[in-house]
Amino acid sequence: MKKWTIAAAVSLLTLLGAVGPAQAAGCLKGAVVGGVAGHVAGHHAVAGAVGGCIVGHHLAKEKAKERAAAASQHAAVAPS
Image 1 (cartoon, rainbow, N blue to C red):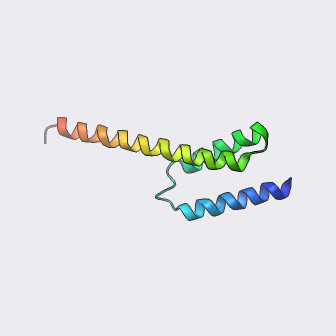
Image 2: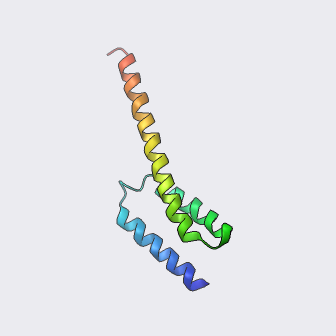
Image 3: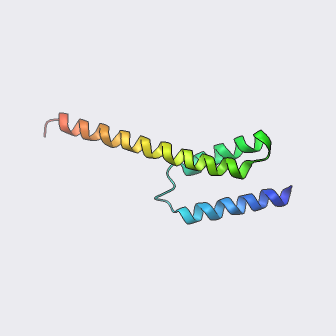
């Protein structure tokens, strides 16, 4: 079981290293949450981490879009 955990950790670190910092928004937090949930659900930590990374990145991207829209609305309303 320890070999599996070590292999999963190495795989995750390799995946995160390949993604790069610009692409990792939300991925790390999602991977941690997904990994823990997958482990608790039945030793599927790697699958949970990958899914969590995807969902976390999507949510971070949506939040960034909302912030940009709010900032552009605020800039349009505020006098120059």
